[in-house]
Image (cartoon, rainbow, N blue to C red; front, side):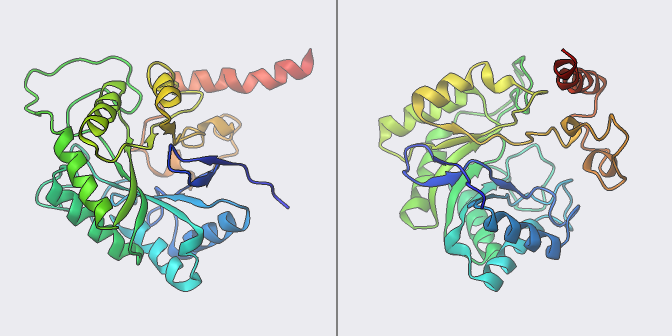
Length: 290
């Protein structure tokens, strides 16, 4: 018997498992049958929180975009387990190269409506529990970059209020229950909280950013916001694409492992990541020898 631990999602009162099932490569690295097996396995072990995105599968390409949500939809239909899952998905932001998804890649009300309706159809459900803005619309330092360099040619104009109003419409229509940010900065997070409270609009409940031993940028400013504003971190890439497992350094990896299979996904494949991981891997050995 596995005793899964649970936590409350923001101020919602909804209890989600401490471990969330990520699905980013389903449809590329994983088949539909394997995706179904993973969902069965997760649910059997107490995991009730599944996260996906309209952009998936990754690496991004038109022929696989949306497959991850489709696999979840066929599993929901086959098993009837939709009511056992807290379901999270995301709307794609600009800068991801996924221009084929919609004529305009942004978070305008029309885009939010279309994105949600398409995701609901693919996942064969009538409501998404947690809907997230996948990446910022503006040019900023996300994906763990610490330094911010302002681009004077960035023509983005603040539109957070319009985005919040669009999300409110989706909540009122019953298409989503709650919303959150992903790959965001402290400034945008606090701005959204401020505007939501000022205009009596739905308040964000979570922030999904990378967090692991190779990327601790969340600790700089967002950790305090999460605690004081009750907007918890949904940490993704906890094993840094598998690099922190040690299998690559110990030469037990296979050609099918993500870093080997998708060279374009080089976020944790640089020299500094490898050197830092090597030092982390020595720590337990040093402790055992004391």
